[in-house]
Length: 309
Ligand code: PMP
Image (cartoon, rainbow, N blue to C red; front, top):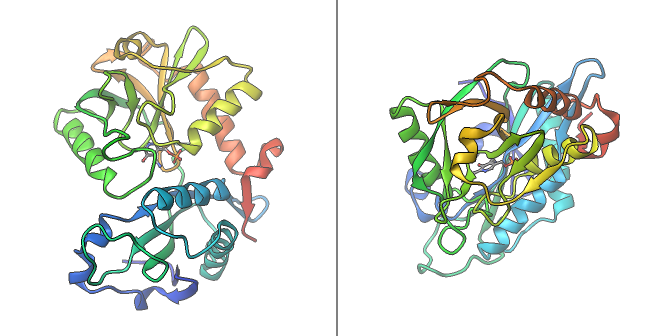
């Protein structure tokens, strides 16, 4: 398998091959108690520039996830931002990337429940090629999952922990088995929460609607981006509120949003066609606007981009 030449590990750029872990350690609790981020970088061929999208915001969220898990951060936000840029430069990557910063607890003998301390928190950053799907015409048929979303008082969705993604895997696998391309999950109040790896937006009567941050969602950076672009550029009214399941069936447009998935149009929910069953006009406009913003073509939002070169 091809891979980039380097990754960043605990403060150093190290050759990919040398960053190994013993199988026994890999299977240890450390992988359950790790937190991570998913960040995208977009290549702008005209400017021969690679832009990392909202890197500071992702690193801040990572440190928030670490705080909830009581992992003292060995590096500052600024140091991790710089480490990410240095890594990508060292790899000489000049294409769309998916960057994955991870914080974990070093394997070793530790009584269950002992909080991590400054000696055993480990951090890793890797960056792999990952072409954007924003120019592809992908449409999703999704179902409302019979699984409930995990919740703040048990496995908090607000932090991006590896353990949370077991719930996402259950949902996504069930959706596939049931013949869908994806799923929307309800929280234990029966309101729309999010997808297994993305937040959800609806358009009804020209208004953009999304679940609140207290609906057991990840506080998505793409969600904030979409809300701001919809208000600032398209002049849309944006509502953050509890969303009912049947609103999905009556919506004019529905789409997922997230770093990895970007803006993903949904054309049916539980086999009810969304609107006329094709990708709606606001979804199309927001996707193309998002594409311009992340590639640095919309100059009003250059503050969100970290240029690598
Ligand atoms: N919800 C979940 C469960 C996710 O995994 C993701 C992807 N990180 C999102 C929402 C979207 O978050 P973001 O826009 O910050 O990538």
